Image (cartoon, rainbow, N blue to C red):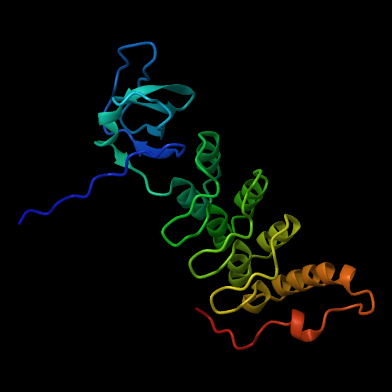
Length: 223
């Protein structure tokens, strides 16, 4: 029995998907957009015409045949991949073409999670500056970007996340907070100070949090 190739996902309303052009296309009308083989196409389904889609390529915006998308190379999670690799130029391109900064990959992680996991502080700084960024979003394991940065020992990423309001109290599926998974003394200290700063306004009688509140759980083991 011949193997059936699953259809490529069509753009969803309000969502931008990214494709790589497999061949050249020359516009036949002023409303259409020309592109070349290898170009990245940022496609949205904002056009009501069943035969056409609205797309961007570089500084161009125009219509492309809807049928073309089904033959183009679909790019999975372009923003996540760029954040993971530290490709600041491609991160900027994705964001400028309305790729959602809060979109989730198959693991339920955001691009911010992967930038923090990889230690790309410049990318983390770019992403936390985006309005409505879900800084403490949890993936399928319950981990946040702060968990990832703390676990991998990326102190600068931890600092940026904390300064941007990342929660130190979120527990993952193993009931571990970021301080519990921190492998680097500097990361642990940064989180400890942040936790103390949160608690102090509500507990004027105690200058410091109790050790049980701020010390990492030693029962955590490396993944």
